Amino acid sequence: MRSIELPGVGSKYEIETSNGDRIAVVFLHSGKIQLYILERGKAEPSEVDLTPSEARRVGSILIGSIFESEKEIVEVAFSALYDLRIAIHTYRIPERLSNKSIKELGIRERSGATVIAVSRKGKNFVNPPPDFIFEKDDMIVLIGESHQIELFEKEILGQVS
Image (tube, rainbow, N blue to C red; front, side, top):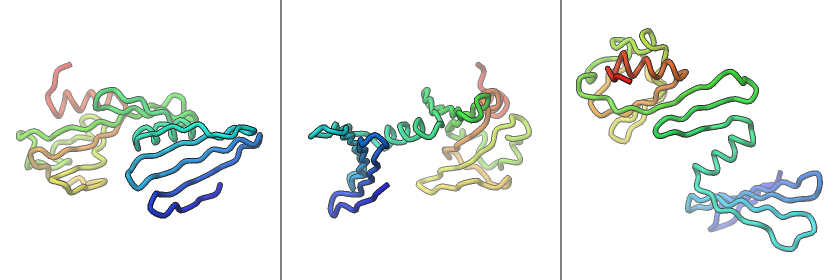
């Protein structure tokens, strides 16, 4: 692999396949990502413009971690662990759960799911401790198996399926 800085444009990474095709990924300063494929013997490359989200999805496919997005939930399936599917979901903390800690709510004990991040007024708390106190409208990121996410919704949020 070869990396090249493109002044005023971004960064370019190139690889050449064993059969002579070249693949280039350009990360533009604008936040967009371009993917170029130049087949051996061709004069012009094919180009695809990707959003950062689309580029991450292509990358996850290439490394074997398939992301399937459905509404607010992302489910991750690992090719090496075919029977493991992890769900990641975001929730807004309602007023009735504010001023309570992760431990006080018993999130992991009651559902098996884990709070891995909290976003509050533009500030992020990654891997918050059990004594972390929620405030109204905090956005939380929860991870677990699908049945654990469902238990969180039922046991903690009080949602009925």
